Every structure is written in structure tokens, then in C-alpha cells.
Length: 465
Image (cartoon, rainbow, N blue to C red):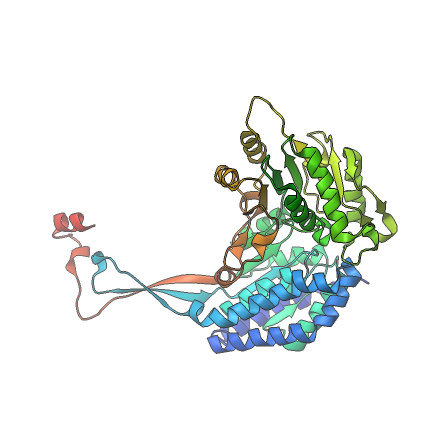
């Protein structure tokens, strides 16, 4: 199945209609926003089976994993917004300095306007609809662009959105990069893009023409550090889960291992044992193990298997786009698998064994010489983990865990540097689609003379400023 490109004329008509609808002020009342959030929740529940079936067809994602990693997370975002949007949208009063005595200071939450939300294929429901929750809560209109690489999911989402919303309010458009190119060239009030750093550069360059603000949720090579004090059994289980979730096709998946030489061999044994415990003796037959999204992705990731010594795994089946979770050892520093985001279940091992330097110093140096990752994972003693956190930079981090920082809506999710800009989830999703407008309300019944030329009493004013 393939999606059909939405004609350029339709793209322009939809954008014009959405801008007109936004300027009608229909989306501004908080009660309207809450009703639309309820409508989205109802649509998601009504179409849940269709979305799950589409995820199975496109990605071999089981209904359980589809619910846990996609649908339930969107539902959680909606319910959180319903509980709090009235407070988030409320005008906030702020302290006023003595220099403008008598005035009152406020922050007014103003929706940005019409937003473009572009999502990738790896979590096609969650990464399209979670930002939409923020757009609705903020009072924006939205054009949604799902990925053509998961056509069944993209069409299922389009059917769901059309059943629930008018196109002048929320619309789904379809197509390939030609459609993206036209969309990015238009004047939106915000572009919310989730995808690769390479494509994000194209998005940013196009958006710069219109000075369109951006939220970029990207990826990168997220290190997974195994220190000498790690609980290897627990570490292996949590790392194996994080790496095999969605077959490694997760922007915050552990990308490569930095392992202390004293625990390397024991960790390899524990990792193999953990994978078998999670997925059975034959992972190919396990219904919770996802496939590569496309033949192109399969060829790319399978090609990494030639770049090192296979210590575990290595089996592939091209007809099913199946790649077994694989540990690679003895990888050369200039190998592609160590220099490009893997986005698959291949796991290169980097052994840090310089006897002249501490393991912590070697880890910090290795990580900091590369682009800032979306996530960093450390397993070992907490105090050493906190020191590494303090000496490095990443979008998010877990100590003695993987992936789980994305689950907590009370902390931001987003990248830094090459891994993105801006963050979202819960109130931050609302903030992403909102302009905080400063308003100073001054009295008309008196007027302080000090600010006017020729600045009388300047010495006094200087002392209080």
C-alpha cells in the first residue's frame, strides 16, 4: 500500500482555511479547547483497533506494545491537558518593580496560530498525536503530516482525524518529501518536526525564510555506559529491553555501549541471557519483536554486521526484514556503525581500557567529542553517574535505566544541539504552541514624572534602579 500525495493546491487551500478559522477566534475559549480534547480522546478510543492493526501491518508491532508505547501515551497526554488546561491558559500576574510603581504586570498565554506537525514512522501514532494535544490545548489549528513509510498507519490516522474534526481546524495531509518541501516553504506560525538531524537542517533552512519558529525533536547516538559497579543482571535486562523495543527503531534507544573492561565479558553473557528471557529462545518467532520498517532500512542496518566481530546474535532474514539483536565487538573507530545513528538492533561495544586514565574520564572524553545525544544512559554507582551527568550534555538521561525518562510527563522531553531544540510533554506541550505575551497595565489617574526628559531627580532614580 502507498499513500497518495496531497495536491499542492489542496495544501494551500487547507492552510488558508485554517488561518481564517484561527482568526475567527473560534479556538480561543478554553471550553472549546477542552471539548476538542475530549473529541480527540473519543476518536482515539473508537479507532484504537484500526490503529493497532495498522501498526502490526507496517511494523509488526504487537497490540500490547502498540498500546503501551503509542496509544496509552497519547491518552495520558490528553487526560493531563484536560485536567490542567484551564490553569495553563490563565492570565498570570507578576511582580512589578518600583520603577513603574502603580502599574500591574501580567503574562497572557496567546496561541501561536496555525501549526504544522510532521512525524516520523517509528512511533507514528504517538509522535504525531502527542504534539497535537499541545496544539489543541494552546488554542491553535494544526496541519498533520504523517510518514509515508507506514502507509497503513498514516491512512488510519487520516480516517480518525476526518471523523472527528473539520479540516479548517485539524487536517491530515499525505505524501513524500516533495509534499514536505512545499509544506516547509509555507508560512506557518510553528513547525513541530520529529525526525533525523539531516532532514531537520532542511526544515530549519526553509523555516528561516519566513522566520517560522521551530520545535525539533531529533535523535543521535545515545551512549549506554556500563561502569565497574553496575548490577550486571539488572543492567542487561533494562538495556536489552531498551534496545529491542521497536527493534531499536527508537530515537532514544541505547545506540552504543561504553564498557569497563572488568565487566565486559560478564555483561555480554548477561545481555544474551536477558534477550532470551524477554523474547524466548527464538526471537524470530516472538510476536513482540518488531521488524525493520523497509527493505532500505533492513539493508542499511544489516550492513553494520560486517563492521565488527559478532559476539551475540547476527541472524537476518531479508524477506521479513528481520534482524536479530546483535552485539558487535572489535569495531574500528571510523566504522559507520560508530558514526551514524543505528536505528536498529545492532549494538557496537566500545571498550575503554586506557590504564593511565580513569574510566569516568574516558567516558566523558568519548561522549563530549561527539554531537550531543538525545539520551545518555549510565549503569553503576549513582555518585559516579551523577558526576558523568554533570560533566556531559544530552537531551535527557537515566541512571541505572533506559528509555524511562520519556514516560514521566513531569520532566521535559527534548534534545539539545544536534539532537534537537525545544521540549514537550504535559505543560511543555502547551507552552510549545503558546506565546507568552507581556502586558503592563498602567494607571491613568497619575503619572510619575521621573521618566520624562529632562530627567529631573536623576540622582534619586539612579539609586533605586
